[in-house]
Length: 389
Image (cartoon, rainbow, N blue to C red; front, side, top):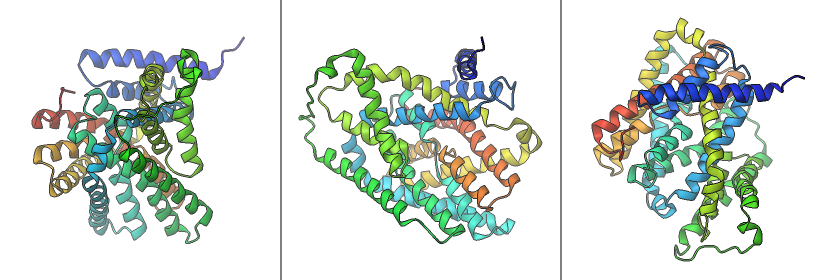
């Protein structure tokens, strides 16, 4: 009797998560580092015990959806809306700042405009999964920094769709009107949810009386339906599934009683978000980084410094204090998971070469790891974090 390969992958992944997690816990390092390290050691570029990157990545994608759903349930929507200037203008300035930096670099390396824009887009996106996981672990989601950074990450998720459209137009001027109409519809639905719930009286929550809501067994399915249902609807509208899950979380947060959602979905969130970080580790190409370590480290260092600087200056310009701006800039310093998608799109379109694609992918993965160390240093310097990382 043969064991299902998927079961073997899951068992081995859990084993390496526990071993790596215990090791890094001894040295008081964030669990995120342990998860990524587990993927590096066990992945195809490490011991090659885990080779099904696609499976782990797909399961990890569910973790990002669950994480965004919980953020929607727990975030103070009114506080986010009140900071619209910092969130909207800050994100726009940060994206243009990244493109400007890419243009300056492109002058020295004689990049054409398409590559300048692609690289600018790639480095402008921060990691929703890493940042929100850290903020949640630090109990800082409701802080001023947490609210501002969360809002910026949400706007970046929306901006990804526009970036993909721009890249597609650069390669082929033709664009599907049907796809564009679906995306606009989804965006309007999301804005409507935010506006309606923002005007809702906090003392009057939504009250739904169904016997199913009182049954612990069915509560699990109702919770999963709410989370992944929102993600699927937004996916159909060709928008970010994470954004759909966040919108579903906002709706659940509007209910008078929603504690059972936390009770039922928290274990799923822990499992699947850890798989996401393991999948990131599995994609770190150790041989390529070893052969090109100087270029990778220089680019990662430059990206972390540049993103920190741009976000710090932009947020300070918009009225946030220097220390909080600096800490927020550090939180947003890495390159995000959606940049993997943009890099793949750019490679398939011929905007970057195979070497350039590998360099970008390595830079993204390494920046996710090193940015956590950078955030830890900055949090101690600024003393803005409630608890030490």
